Figure (spheres, rainbow, N blue to C red):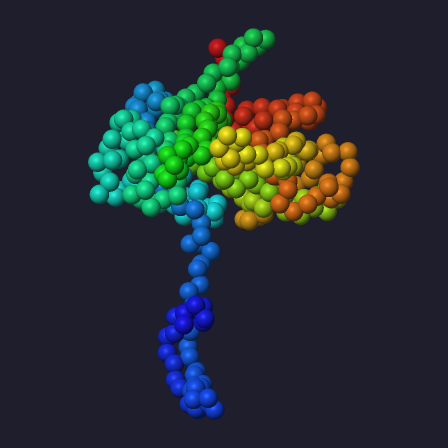
Length: 342
């Protein structure tokens, strides 16, 4: 009956019963059918976020090597928040689950193998397990001495090096991995938190790590896609948090699917470099940009589900690059630096 109604019968009443000419009986029934509607959120892939491995030697905040536990907590929270913010994943934060304390203790000491992570992922009922390792989390004052003058330029600088792996617990295979390695000036760090205390500096760097890793994983599993085009103006299916006005990205065109010749496993699709898009503005869910370097209207070649954004593109115009660098230098002098005599 449930196969015929495509749901479970919640209640019913018999309206009439009649006997047919051949001895069969016919009944008219009014029934209420309960149908299960699966919410879209339930279809999202789930990720178990584990606390990052980090040693006290990896941390140096104004010369202090303390703050390891803060860095673990802030980074985990930032990754969870950023992944959830993509609206593409269900995120499982298992740092405080008592039944898994033993496994997490082993993981924190760095003794767990990929198979251990995979087994933990099965126990968490997660599609993926995210493992991170912080190799460097630094904050210091950098002093630049000008050769042609007696002045010095003091700038506040943050630096991070973080390795991550996304593991499929069913196959114990690494489906995505990478390293986030960058240097940030104070203006960039202040977007993520206050720099007045060492705690705030750790939190700002951790928030940056969370955003970068979430964006990288989202891009690997769900590449940022161009969804509409008018002339060289395009609409991109990603919003504030992943993309920012002024950024330039390489656009690639999807080609045929590629399979492993021995196993038949799907290795992905061909990607051909197409052009460059500069982000002009963003909304919470969408971004808008302008395509360059194509030689014709992007609208002429646009097809849905075909064009994706990958790594950030370098500045191709030397004058524009020089102007941008000068603007950055002025910003550093204004916001982050103190001039004095040597």
